[in-house]
Length: 125
Length: 293
Image (tube, each protein chain N blue to C red):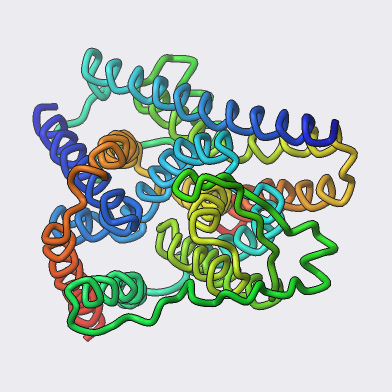
């Protein structure tokens, strides 16, 4: 019975990782297609020199509402970053279902560090 | 627009090659793509590291999905040690924002040289120039330490070559944890997966069998990298028009690379890449000193 639950955990974790990669790659590709079709919204010359790109979640969100290609690409990149984060979050529930409270605590600690890293970056970055 | 498109295609092409080479050598794409971006395409080190860190998350998540399904990764061991690697990665990413770019080149060169060391030994041993001491000769089953038992750090996996389930216990959790912190620090500082250090902690320090070590290390790389990627993003070091082709290119390249592995991983190819990478690490070292002098 415990063995079954562990197997279930493994399959859930595996599915989260695989779908995360596929979804984020699809969003990045979609953004790139938009970029080629619509253009960057005004920029010749070097990438870094002329193109402003979003650096915060709020800027990405604002850009998405106007279907800005660069913001769609950035959303895809953020989804890549969120893939392992969601794997960790899902693992907390999976360990809870196994009633392995020690690992619920360990996994929650890792999730805390990941969430904190975004907050630290917001302040210190 | 055309200028951007060409630049995009060049970065994509370079990243595909980096992904193929990285997976052929078992080093990962990041440690290949960063020199390619910085030395040849003159991308700023931190922007290259930001692009690399995203590509690493994508590739390691993809391969970890398979390893976890096939029960090669030890999820509990990985989860516990991710505390250390993620804290290390946050420290590394913050440090990367503080130190000079030239220092990053020098540290990168040293880490690349260190990563090449086991490969060099293997090549020398296989050429028969010198007998390499067999590291798996440690037949005496390691005594698990108390912390390892308490954390449930035992495991097993099915080895098709041996046709049976391989069981293992772990030891020296303290030493393994310390190395894992350093692995996280290197990952956050340089934008690499630092799988070499993670395998060192699992395999050499804690006594996990090589196959399980590789799979567990891969499982951990994504979370470690995610801990620093947020900091890179908010600092403005993830340039979407560089990070997107690098992520897609390295992901696609390593997908192809793992499928080529059995057919292409001949001795001569590895020697060629070894020499090229040794040359590249020296280039990185020189670049670091040129800037600082």
